Length: 113
Length: 115
Image (cartoon, rainbow over all chains, first blue to last red):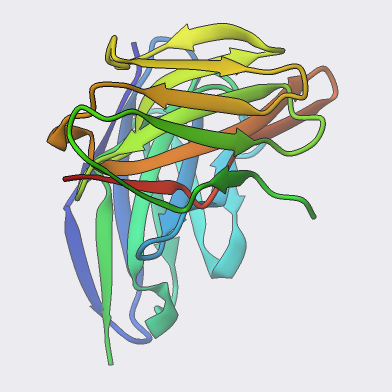
């Protein structure tokens, strides 16, 4: 069975500060991991994905995530937050790259001016 | 580039009524997924189809059914609607073929409100 836990349902940072959103996974097989972003009343947009090719994954909008097997983590980071980054972020796990997704509970990111 | 198209965008139904949601996947994608996202919740997998056959089933109520048609579009049918069915329903499509793998790409969703 697979599962994802996102630590912190709400994270608040100042504009220009580091963004760190935490995600830990559980999987009996090598996982495929994803980060999606959801703006209010909109669909889910893929930020980045880990497919075992490289442990440090770069995504859109300056986000990146590092797969750490020893820590079963896939935390999302961005060096400098922008107001437009305010949204809900979901970490997800799957058995394969095109498979069904198991989502974490989501983390709402607020960015203060 | 073509995206996943869902219709309608918004739907208001009364309790015990029936609703049908439609999804048109990205051309060439071989798998369609349906997810339900309740207010303030994470998306929950309902059901999926691979090449028009049901491939997996999640937490989908017996009152719901779905199918994928010959043109690859999919419909989610919901009967005897309850207040708790009010949610955002997403469709996603993907491709998992040798040499070409594309992750779940989501539509904008259908917001169903049951009153």
